[in-house]
Length: 262
Ligand SMILES: Cc1cc2nc3c(=O)[nH]c(=O)nc-3n(C[C@H](O)[C@H](O)[C@H](O)COP(=O)(O)O)c2cc1C
Image (cartoon, rainbow, N blue to C red):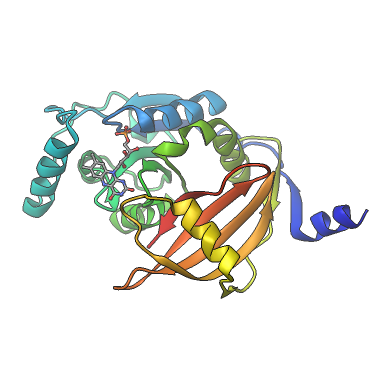
């Protein structure tokens, strides 16, 4: 009984009132290596939406380092790749899910071309992305800044290393956004953070492991109950500044970080 009361106090069970009526939905995505494609197809299948892959006329080399140098050069020069013509007429849709891998902390270069050549005025745009460590927050803000005449809604992002979590997370994300009918459990807001204990600091280190892009020490944390476990929002010091890292501990499983916020 006590457990039930605690759960009822910390979790709010929300029943969505049905999917957005009559909206016509398109999933437009770029995926160099196939990871973002998994998310795009999960969204497309859940919603029965139309889907189209964005293809650069001159595809990127599958070699990671070659893509890093080409991508960096394009960004430095402000010259982004030409795309194969998009078959779908974006004007015909109300909601457009725009998917991409995170590159250099923001959306991948082909998306820059998409956003500058296609008119998204008056549309609802929902970003989704995959990444090594994070970039949903930074790339979503960049899309909103690029598309002042569209409504950019909260998006979904997942680490490539957690691709197996996609079916369950996409289902919850679509229900939470009102795109899909059905019940979902909405977690309470994070409470105010407190200074980390030794155990919490060890939990952070275990979640981040040897990930090369995060060399930070946890300083503060807030935690909340989520479906099937606990979620922690750590603030960590990198030396040159602070980052925030979301860590998930599912019941009976080891801690994993789900995304870095900068
Ligand atoms: C050029 C390039 C830059 C990248 N930059 C970042 C980055 O800044 N942050 C990050 O978390 N991951 C970064 N990644 C990793 C990709 O976001 C990640 O592997 C993604 O899941 C790839 O998706 P895809 O298979 O759909 O192409 C980068 C990858 C490449 C190729």
